Length: 58
Figure (cartoon, rainbow, N blue to C red):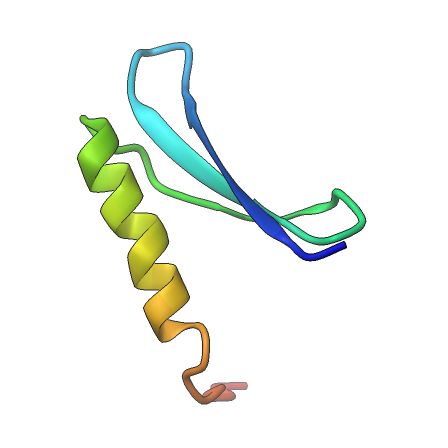
């Protein structure tokens, strides 16, 4: 099963999303957004940048 994004409303009324792996484990959680459109744009940004190189700063 492929991973998925879950868009939800937090208890304080703001929108967030989380990325879940195929096994259901949460692997990323977004910042809070004031509206659903902004959260959806955040998901699209992650999708667009997911193929970016890893920069090891250790």
